[in-house]
Length: 400
Image 1: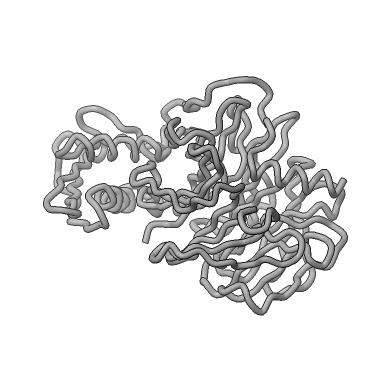
Image 2: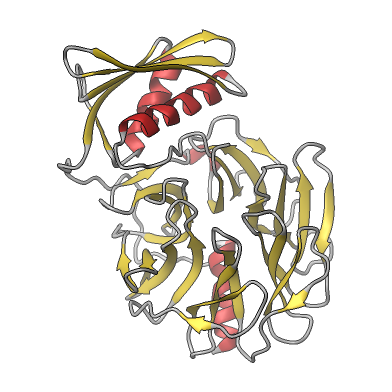
């Protein structure tokens, strides 16, 4: 059973198995207009920025983009290189509501940052903006699984690795300066590597005997959690941000996988098959007793991601029948809810900054795409272009 779980965990991460029940095209899953949605008109003074602004707001389940006038009218103006002014008015009378000039690293980034300002000024629910997020992911468009980075809507896509080897699980350092990932590049066995995104220098982060995988930094940037099997079983370890001074936190016969820190960096949620099948457990980042989360939704619960925008929520992958979907566990209410109901498999959830939307990987036997999901309405938007081919292992860097 343990070997089967470990094999399935690796296959899910590597995209080597067909998880869907039949051949389908991945498309948007639409929902009706919710009464809680805000109607907004969105425009910009260049065709490129106009299209990007509309794409961004159409992805957000809090908003319904309309022609003409909305409850808020949001207009973006490129006023200088890498500077965008956002002007917000209200209703048909277009009463002035807010205006600000926002700078970015490019015209595109400035627009997305300005759109986040608009979200934070208009959503009336205290939600953060997520449009200016950066993502890391795996793509097979070259015929090899390599690490890429881009903005949330796949502009400025950059190939970061050229290993020509199986790569998986890229994760950001909190300030966006480096990425750790697992690769079979060096030895033919899974080792953890780190890439400095300023110099593009790659260094070996963990290369112990056995499996080295699942590396993830704490939000405070002081620790890293990873899964190592040098002692025999895949166990959870925590070290400093350089991967040194490692401490073994689990000492069981079970298989551990997919560690993720809590937003305050004090705890870690991870997957273990200690109960016979993969379930979610939480323990202190300093070690101690683990407690199983009473998810009570599936006999397969894996790939947890703890929301930074809403610390009460943990997203994870569940098995439903012969397929997989995304669920969210609410720590305050102590209950789980299935949030994706697409006609294809959904795996590998990754929260966005607002604690309401997340990214996940949608898979059919013929394709694999990254989707954006509103966990409150179930609206799913496909955001990765088909030109990237098979994609997986998406990780989010919140707007800075």
